[in-house]
Image (cartoon, rainbow, N blue to C red; front, side, top):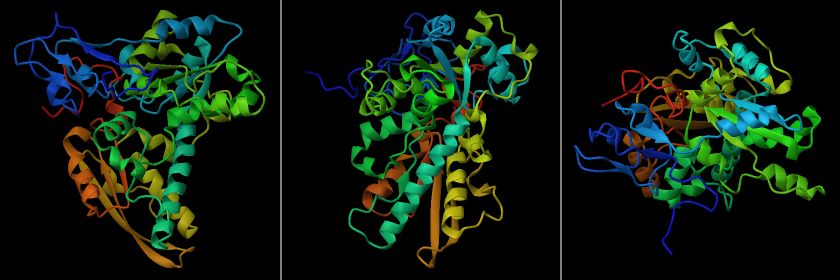
Amino acid sequence: MTATSYQPGEIRGLIQIDALKCKGCDACKQFCPTHAIEGASGAPHKIDEERCLSCGQCLINCPFGAIHETQSALDTVLTKLKDPDTQVVGILAPAVRVAIGEAFNLPKGQLLTNKLYGAMHQAGFRIFDCNFAADLTIMEEGSEFIHRLHANVRQEPGAGKLPQFTSCCPGWVRFLENEYPSLLPHLSTAKSPQQMAGTVAKTYGAKVYEMAPEKIFTVAVMPCTSKKLEASRPEFNSAWRFHQQHGSDSAPYADVDAVLTTREMAELLKRLDIHLPDVAEYQGDSLFAQYTGAGTIFGNTGGVMEAAVRTAHKVLTGEELAKLELTPVRGLEGVKEAELTIHDQQLKQDVQLKVAVVHDMGRNIRPLLEQVMAGTSPYHFIEVMNCAGGCVNGGGQPINGSGTSWVAQL
């Protein structure tokens, strides 16, 4: 039996190249973080699906529109929205609301949170802002980091590995699993905001929606094609397992039932004749539309780290950071770092923390991982995002008519 990098049930071959459209220009190869694209210059290319992360960077940077997704849940979601016995919950990522306007001829980068809430409400969705789940993620990931830090300072047996890696980006997680599996203990055990949202929607959310969890259909609206692969991972059925432990005998179901990209959500609204610019603003329908500024910045490179440092500082010192903006981890430099001294009340000593932020993973991550492998890494915490710029430049975002993504580095 041929070895495979996929688990049973996972979506494979999500991103493919149309040989009839491909010009063999090699543009896509410049953006693939794992060198998964094969083919001589001038000849049609193909993707090695075992090495592919499903990140879609090749897709949004192909100047000839020769690369496409092979799976879409759009028709399924439309059917579920019509079903009176199903409660469809839309999990809306932060990077979607600043990009979807492009599909309706609105200015690029315009923030449309409440208009998009309104459009989704009109379509029949209940609103679950993924920023709410991002706040949960940073509390979990930040708490885990503090636990690892304390255990390492005290030299406790079984202390978690440092540096701790973020775990929000599915392309990064798959990359680590495939290419640096020995470093998996460094990965945070926290789920991504998408997967936390799906689990919460079908556990606590079942009470909020007054609906049996098996009748809740969760739809993540994401800037990222790799989120489709993440949602298909067989281990992400925590809500079903929880209810089984409490007496349910329902058939298995996933925490996240479907993923739509920003492009697909725009198409869904158009099919339903919902013109986003004309929609009245809507504030949401539950506490799941409430969130902090920490959750909001998750979609940018450096955002997860900045939120983590804010949380760690508050927990360790009992005080907020004097300046919430951690400017050294902002911007588009491939590797950014910050160093700060925090007085740890529990340890009763000053702790010097050094953190790093990496985006455009294929170009920038390997030297840092080699340091970790060699035991010479100077960092305590490393944020990694596959896509250049972070989720705002994900493979599911509107495609730039010029043929390259907005932070292209050909």
